[in-house]
Length: 612
Image 1 (tube, rainbow, N blue to C red):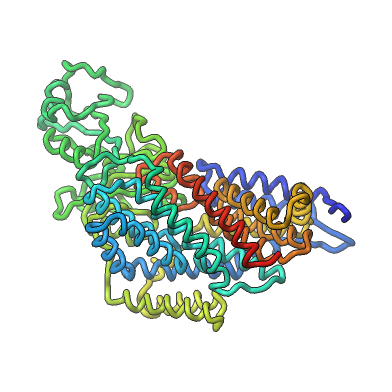
Image 2 (image 1 turned 120 degrees about the horizontal axis):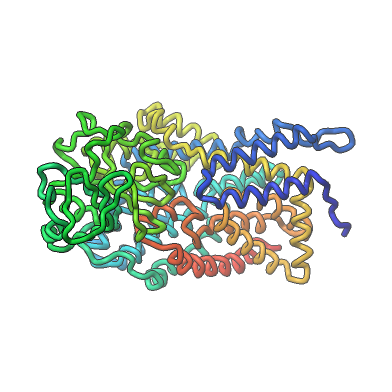
């Protein structure tokens, strides 16, 4: 076989792909910003240095922008918005109530029920709202039943990822792989085309999460009656006339029965006082403390202090944020990638003015024991951080309904309206039309979106909020990179190189090695990026070997979905990282064995079901 030749354009695209994959792993850089930068470099480079062969330009500007109109992307966006309607109408609330009741009686059986239910639901809709729905229920129920919170939160989240593998609409990754393979002239996968291998291997994964995973996870949550046990960094602002005014530090601590721990005492922007027992506390002083939400509110009450800065002009206390209003509640807000708070300060985001909520304290997911030495409104927030906020029930519900941030409070139920049955019926029609082949997935999802809007199950505001700019941008950029890799011959060269490195192995073992490579890659970079770049390479490998390409395409699909081993491999991992109080190593403890179980399972099942 003659070696495949490569040229300068191909090498440049390969190097840019490596840079892109590196940037996608940098949490400090917004994913959409990295994607846009790569797209700009790609388009500009091929415009200045046209890629021509025999006088014909092979890659034009329109080819790189084609991803914005890609059928798979349209289907993904439509399904995001249709899924949002299920969330806003409370259509899944009855199922959540069943889960909650089961946890109060049979926690071990309830865990299996939760895993199976989450996996089944994730086969037909995005798993993020499912995880959001189940998290507060699991935290409260597991604490009441003395079952480890950390033992159930991660298995639940990973179980929804497993369930998403089983249908073409289960995840955006599946839709991309199926769409790209169809664009490249291969067969069209039906909705349940690969449900059998996913069910067989996924079943083993679910059993692992039920029986073994809880034993591998340490109890990260202390036994507390509070259903929100995170430790928050906060500041007690001393008011004139309050108990602490004029008292010594020792007297203040005695008032709290010695339970409050003060990390710092700040008197002015540049003056910090020594924590001497005899130091006198004055109005305007800030006591930096760390504790649970209930304890922080208790200290605020008995010391006559405030957890907010009453002189803060950026977050005024007025009729829009009334602290004395009836029905005040606490809520915990998780900062996720793509949310308005990601990589911004509360001041820059105008959080209080926009949502009518007061930020009281901050929990840093990656360094929960670290000190916060300044005003929390001036701290640049990172993905996984959790804000403790106070406000009215209506304000908290408004934040939930906006759909732009994850609210973890368990004080308010999801809305369950008369539109819930209507939304479920429309979702059922979308699935039925796509499953029977009556309509392509993109058409049925788009029609379902139209019905949701026409029947008032969804508003345009909620529909727009359901769209994720980072997801759209990384898909478009990855499609552009994948197209460039194909047209310049680099995908074929990479496939040839992989085959050359593994040619001494039997074909099933080559398939297994490629599956393992994809599962490692998806835990380092975005699963969508891994899928888009991996699909043309998989087809090239199958062509080089002269075998059926279908199992190699499924190796990309299943491998790119195995985002188990890192908290940043998948969005829901990031959500449960904070809710379960996990560390990075906790994901390795469970994620690596689960990846091995799934990898071995697919390595045996795929060659059996799809002859090579």
